[in-house]
Length: 307
Image (cartoon, rainbow, N blue to C red; front, side, top):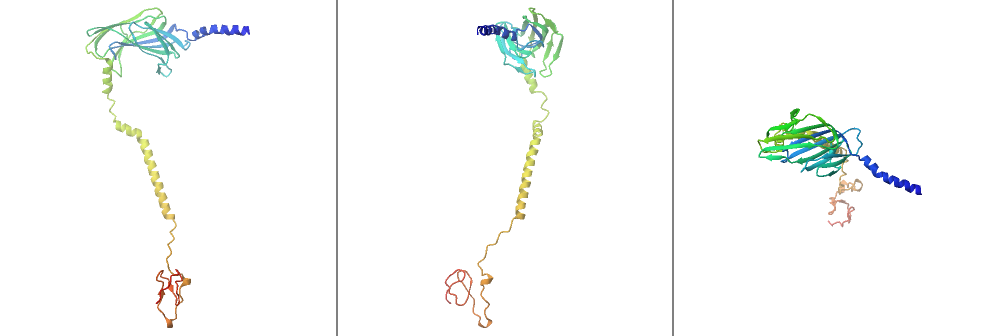
């Protein structure tokens, strides 16, 4: 009994270590994409960090992402195998970092950081220094729609125009960042038109020539099988109803006529002798023929009137 208690106590002591091993902190990130969107939907810089862990990382894994001062955390999520962002993971924010635990190999962190504004001039610096090593570190800057010119350091490797929002994206050279190494990106620009980029993107989507196809035509085309099915069903019901009615008319037995109040042949009066012909008499009630000497009608029993 004592041996069992000692063994159970030892297992309980090892349990926290086992749990910590399962959720061990990540020391290596395979790739990290950082998107900087100044003046996008707020008068600040929207930072989108998308990370991917190496294939040999044990999951679930705990990752710590550094945060600049005075940031506003917007979202923390995992990215599933079908590229769905799901914000059901646990995370702990602090003044200068956010620690998350993800069951998937990819994750997403979003936050807003302030910039310096002097009139229409905007200046900000993105800084990264963490206890993890990043094998592939890439930064992209979205040029604000109201910016006439933009200066970026380090210099971008290439610039592209988005096919949907028509905004310019400046992509910096991909590099590796060691644990504890400082990596900075400095950006300054001047707003010639004080507007947020999201407003221009919405306007362009609303005026996009996607309305060339008439919506009623598309709706009719989509509902054509349903319309044909309903019409066919109505036609079948009508044909069956007509056939049933016609069958009743052709196969119905004729109604038996109501009998008339006339004498049957067996009860007709014998033909009188031509030599003693008397005027025929009939019952005043039912019209049946009467014979000579009848005081009551042989059909209805009514008393025969004299004369």
